[in-house]
Image 1 (cartoon, helix red, strand yellow):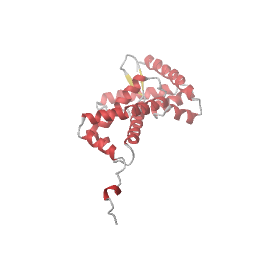
Image 2 (cartoon, one colour):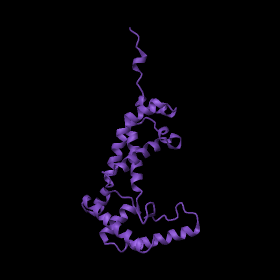
Image 3 (cartoon, rainbow, N blue to C red):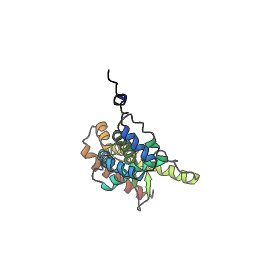
Image 4 (cartoon, rainbow, N blue to C red):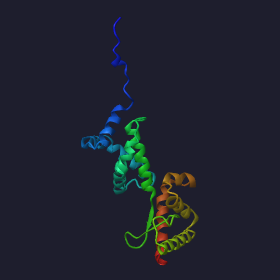
Length: 207
């Protein structure tokens, strides 16, 4: 009776090649990083572009490029903790796609209304004390945000609802369209009109 070739019956672990690539990345192999970018760079940008579209930023190539770079930074940040968490339960492509979608969603969710000179920003955010330690600055920030929410009440109901969902609740255009039962194409123009009014009122009140 012929002997069985034991090596031929040993199953290859799922996504073994992906796990080897990640191990090379964690060792700091420059060639592995280039392979990773070549293999998944288009996938990452595609997922970021999809998220940008859901937030009404489909044509904003600069924002998409920035968000794509943030995905790769997230993969390497904190001692490459995200890559270290890959266990091969799914393909590396699937894993990277999920990370890209989550990172881009967080990035596009951070929305601010620009007021006055470039770089002067006022958050539409209820967490007014975040990152502010000086008591006087906290008091000013609280008053500014109080006045901003008062101004919000001056907007027509539909504009106010869109602004609140987009800026306060980080809802995408798709989510706003579904929750308010309005065409997705009307959200951008309505949002811009509302923001223009808020900027004007805030400038008049020197906020």
